[in-house]
Amino acid sequence: MIKKIFKVDNTWAFILAFLIAWMIFKIYTGDEYLKAFNYIIPGLRITFASTLISFIIALILGLLLGIGRISKNKVSSTLSRTYIEFVRGVPILILIFTIAFVVVVDAAKFLNINNGNVPMIVRAIIALSIFYGAYIAEVFRAGIESVSIGQREGGASLGLNDKQVMRHIVLPQAFRNMLPALGNDFISMMKDSSLLSVLAVQDLTYKGRLYAGSTFRFQETYLVLTVCYLCITLFLSILQRRLEQKLEAR
Image 1 (tube, rainbow, N blue to C red):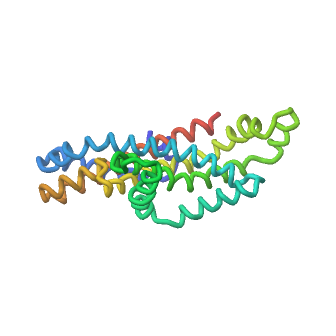
Image 2 (cartoon, helix red, strand yellow; image 1 turned 45 degrees about the vertical axis):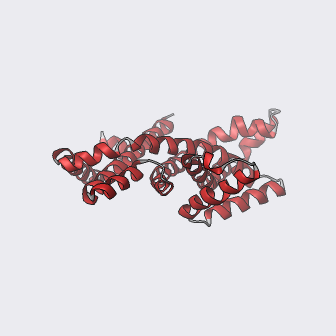
Image 3 (tube, helix red, strand yellow; image 1 turned 30 degrees about the vertical axis):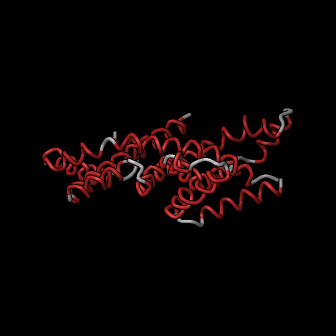
């Protein structure tokens, strides 16, 4: 089964499987590890939810920016390029703080609402979406440009307008080329969601920090967190590879 999934030298897979098995064994045979696990694991729901919602928003934003990036409209192209370069030039942690404590606060003042009514998880999702939207925009740009000009000309010869060509001809073909990069971005976002703990969003990492701080069981806590994130990312990587194989088989 592993050979079918990876189709390469799988020594690394066996090493990782052994490490994970050893970590899980320690968790389930040690009371302190099990206590840490039971306290931390409820944060998994917030981790998945915030990542999924952020990724969906980032996909929409990335699609619009990617199309704008290759647009013949000078204004659209310039604005998209400016956004992408600006966001990619700022560390994600700094962007999270800026969105949460500057942009949201100023926007609340402008709209004459209390910024305290904007939950931290909403601010966190906005920050993740804005950050990854810039990277996904480049994925869409590269994917769209990978479709040959002949495909677009063929669509135009059938009487389709630019929007119809993009929707029915270009994007379906580009998606196949974009899937690996989009999958990698989703996995990266899942890991970067751990940074949302700085806003007191009660994800896996925040729950871990709370537990470690109150019990001083740092070894048990961070080993449990390591296992959780490693299992999640490996599962997503395998899922991505399987999906790629199915698309290649068609």
